[in-house]
Image 1 (tube, rainbow, N blue to C red):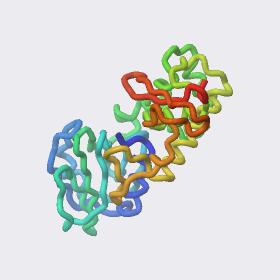
Image 2 (spheres, rainbow, N blue to C red; image 1 turned 90 degrees about the horizontal axis):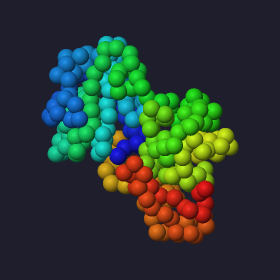
Image 3 (cartoon, one colour; image 1 turned 45 degrees about the vertical axis):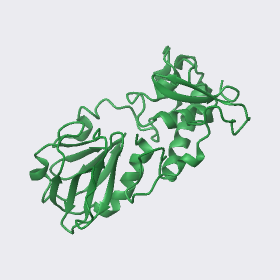
Image 4 (tube, rainbow, N blue to C red; image 1 turned 90 degrees about the vertical axis):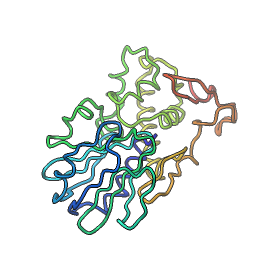
Length: 271
């Protein structure tokens, strides 16, 4: 599933090619994604200038003077910059065509993604209004994390994966950050000390930034706007390495399920 680094990679990939351009036409080949694609896109977007391409959590926000196009990549979606002459593939569901014939093409094999429209402040949209702070922002710090963790019995891995607490820390990155911070994923969130919260916040920021710098992680479906995979997979210390030797201490990496999600950790390096 594309997480924050993959979505940010997509944003950075498409933004230079489409920002400032005028929407000319929208082709919707499959109107039923996770939610129905609004029919109004065909009339709301043409003639509008794309002012910016931003990200909030795992949502891409394409802003115009009239409103904002909200895109979500779902479990297997991707965005490509192409031309009208490029052959349409089986799961290419939407084309956003600009006046200079640049095409932003939305592909989603499993159709769990979304293309929505709002004429209001997008931060007030029901999908975005209750999201926690961005993990790379100054709002997400040790004081904030310790406050949200206080008196919570939930596993710390589940807490940092809760988008109402902090956005974008998906399963892979939660496992990697907890390893880097030396914190066992099953520990109760409320048990963490101030230094441990500081270490975990620093680790989350470090892991996410490194993943962004390497174009995200490709485990199955993800590719960036140019169709290239992300390379953070080569830097994984624990995720997907159950039974293999820890790269730090050589003890076997442990695997278990937390909240129905596969979790990995080193019983020696993480306490």
